[in-house]
Length: 563
Image 1 (tube, one colour):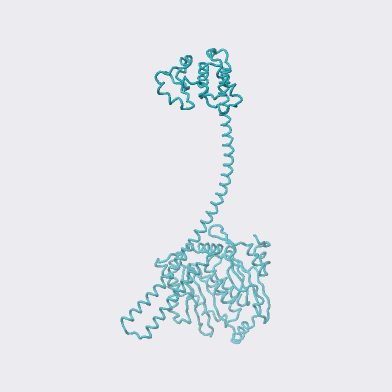
Image 2 (cartoon, rainbow, N blue to C red):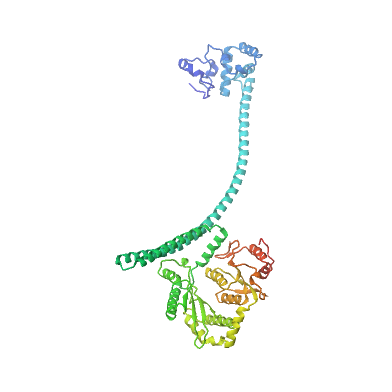
């Protein structure tokens, strides 16, 4: 027995399949003996085929009589034969209207004639073609929908990809900024930890002394009260330092200033070409020598008393070089023999000294302006001609003592001229200074400190290039310029000098700047460790202070606010 392999339309025949399974009579011997073989899922013989067909509800009531007449016209045997042939070809059961039309054109007895096709065959082939065409049309429709959806998805994915690229770029920029912030916070944390440890050591020392005093019972009540007062003062200092730390953390809001500080720290964090440890050890030895030579505090005083201790911490390996922000600086008062002059020698050591020259200038109010300027220039030239690698402050002191007579005027000039110059300095001077770059935090700090000391106003713009404007009484401005020129620079020049005789008028009325400050305009990174300022903002700042013409003097072009 052969099976057709054609799927049934419904499961009605399964309910009666068991009882007819063994001896089910095939309704059409021709089909039963054909190559296809097998049985078709047809209704039970006692029931007419037309009654088991689906689709009677789709038949118009007016056409039901004609359709029933067609079924009555054909015998059940012919209907069964046509039904089986339809099912075999189309693999499904026909509906009422479909089957009635098929009966009218079906010629079942001519199936074996291959010379021509009957209407029934053509009808079945046409139905097969129509169903195949419908499937293809449906497939084409689905493909068109898929292509349309694909185009939409490609467009959406393209837009999404562009947005994601922008987001990735923004996230990378934020990541770099956060890394810079994290590095700066870690450096601040290390410095604050050092300060905290120092304060903690002082606190522990006070408590130890208090405990020793209590054990010995040899200290009076007044001493105990004094120690308690000191302890309270220390606690207040710790509280104040804590508040200062909190305030410093609060002031980290502005991104451009913070980026500038970070990049500035990176510029200062380079490893020097010389052996900095050996240089610092020589500096410490020289300071100890000078301290023994000038034990009186009125003759020798350190600018920062904590600097030696921090340098010792670096030399002992307790802190890294990038956290060493102090340098040795001191004031030394020299009294040359045979004169009544007192020359104050102000000196700061760069970390590379004595491999690099020290920054040294003098103060001598009793000396005339011209002689004082010449003294500083000649001393600077003497220092530059010394061999590098050897400590030189003792040689500088000897040079001053040996040559001071060359700069001393007669007693009358000494008594009258300086007072007259100080009292009757009526010229306001304004210097516009250009430097190849200003990166070092030590130079930036000296620029601000010296301007405050000499009561100058103006501004400094660090970066590459560096710009400094200083205004005030001409003597103070001249002194400021000589101090700056005595430092180590790749290039520093005066681009413009403005002078105005103000007589006895108040100098503050003629100043263009109310104070001296360091300005930062939109820091932008450059090659390597370099960084540049937004010169458009610099031009706007100069315009606000009636100095817009200086921009072309500095850079050779007219300024624009959005350079």
